[in-house]
Length: 205
Image 1 (cartoon, rainbow, N blue to C red):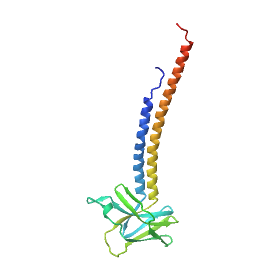
Image 2 (cartoon, rainbow, N blue to C red):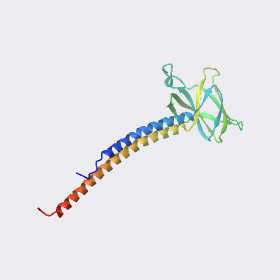
Image 3 (tube, one colour):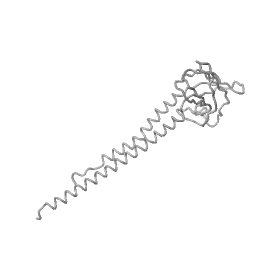
């Protein structure tokens, strides 16, 4: 019947919207991982390093490993070393308290695996000196520490944004399909009513 809208174009639109969700999530995940890893400052321990911290607030020190080395899963094998860590403000010379992390945060990003071990709070942005040594006094191999702010919250935000993209694209696709069916049904009713009126007005043969 002429004049009845066919929903195929809207079905294709709904499919495109549905597929766009995972695609956008992949782009968001890739860019988010880059931002998260770039925000972590790596330092070697035992040793000392200068940190330029641009924001006040709570910072976490992570014990970081490369995900796989020599065919072994280092995430399972390596223990967090017993390190003594000191933080000193370069401008005032005051020592900043460094204490065990209040919660457990871990990440596996771009081949880097980290676990939270210590935390510290600064109230003024600036330059700080981070010094670390082994409590047992032995030299031992050097390890990698990563210092960052809001890592746990950033990971949670990234996951929530991804879920919103998935759910949002699915809901929008459903809305498009339902709207297409509704418009088609409405047009069918309109055409049926028009046909009924024409039949009533037409004189009998």
